[in-house]
Length: 233
Image (cartoon, rainbow, N blue to C red; front, side, top):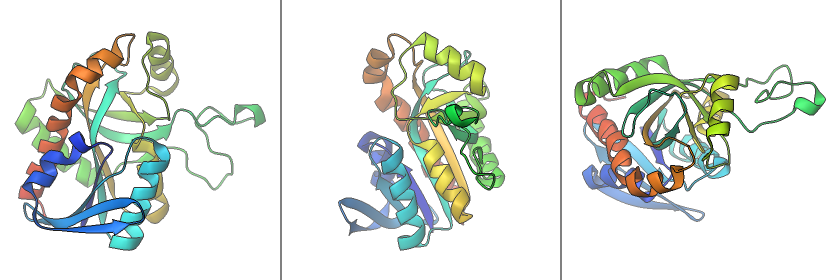
C-alpha cells in the first residue's frame, strides 16, 4: 500500500476525487482515507502544516497502515533562482534548515550523535519514475530535481532565501518534507517528495502564495494521480 500525504486540503483534493472504494479511518484527531487510486491501493491523509504534523502522519502510515512507501505532495517556495511558479521540484534529499546545535559544535542542520543521519535521501527508483512522468506532463523546462529544506517557518525574505541557497544549496523550502523523509529513513521505508512552486519565498511571497498555491497544488497532485495509473507497488 502506498501512503500519500499533503499538508492542506487543496493539496489532496484532486487525489481524493480520483480515489475509489474510499473508507474513512479515524486515528486520534486525524482522518485517513483508504481506497484505490489508479492501479494502486493507497491511504491518503491531510497532515496539516508543520514538521510535527507531517512526522506524526508519516509514522501512523507506517505503523498503523503498513504502507510500503510514502509520497508527499504539495507546494513549496522557490530557493533555486531559475524556478518559476508552477514548476515541479522532485526532492533528491532533505534536511531540517532550522535544526541548530551550532552552540555545541555542530553544523547548522546537523543532528547531534554520531549515529544520527542529518541528510535524508529520497528513494531513487520512485523519484526517477515521478521525474519521467513529470517530464511528459510538464516538459523539461518545468521539472527540476534537487534538495528540499524544511523548517517551521514560512520563508518570505530575499535574505533568508540567499542564506538557504548559500548554506544548503537548496532548490525549494517547505515545512514538511524533511520530517517525513526523516521518519521514512528511520523506518527503512522508501520516500519521495513532489513539490510545485507556489511562490518565490521573497518579500511578496505571502501574496503570491495566496493567489497561486491552489493551482500549484493541482500540478503536484496530478503527478501523483498519473503515477498510480502507471505503477503499482
